[in-house]
Length: 395
Image (tube, rainbow, N blue to C red; front, side, top):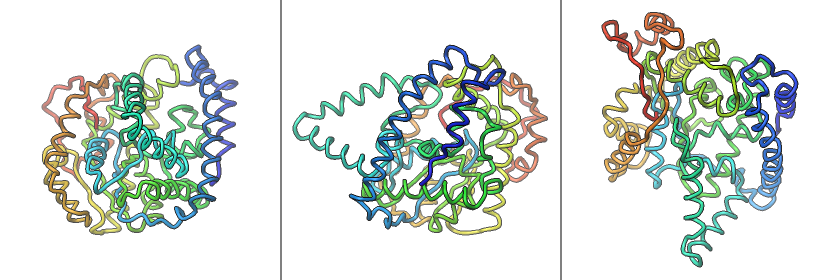
């Protein structure tokens, strides 16, 4: 495992010395974030990497742990992957995922074993007092974020794990200096074989640590960014099951623009307006066409291309169908799990709203840019509908 120190120091230098006229300009808000980040992050990384070293000494068998039939949910951002991911994670007898806690606080086997031990003590001797305190803290901190329900204890997009080696697309949310970044958005096509191997070897080791420490059988992950690395993903996980979710570009594109701008604004202080439009246009087109081309050229019962509308309108039928197709055990309580997931989605009040007109785009432009996607999936082009501002559910 190798940490991308070059990129780490380049983002440090740009943040303090060459951020003028960028979206990461050095305002008071940005300076406070950087000061906190560079105090906390290096300490956390030092602890994590010491524990990774302890894993190799105390739990070396994790390296041989088999990852059986992992399920990867791909597609563009804002295409239903969060809904499906969290729904499947409720089936804890079948699936496990990395939570925010797993990613940022206990990524190693050693840390997981320590927290499991403390949890048992808390349950046996302290009536779950620590558990209640942590959940209360979670609600008062991460629970306040409105664009997307975040919790230490909910499954999260494990593309985040690459922050631990400072080598993945999520670095751009903290440091949006795209001219400094490797082209993660075109991972399969743009990165060297050695670079791809370095990143994916680390990712696979993190899944092995998690599965070894938890004793779970099947892993499920949702990673829109993996749409760009589907070829490499299949190479490193030949037993993988892949679901590709496709949503109407008229909904996906403006929602993605709004989401990325919102997310990066949490750590930066750009001028008002929507930014990163060229990046998002290029990225979203590639994240449609590249994975679909791969799946078309590699037909397999382990792959499924799924429309967002079918998932939302008929979730039980869709999920039972791919459980059978992919060889996962039947789940008698699936209707209850689906009902709970749907209710959670409907009751979450997001402040994520948008209008593609406000972003400088017309319906006709979006239909033209993604013409092949509209044709392939027979998506509605909505010629006769009056455009309105949309409010996004968590998807």
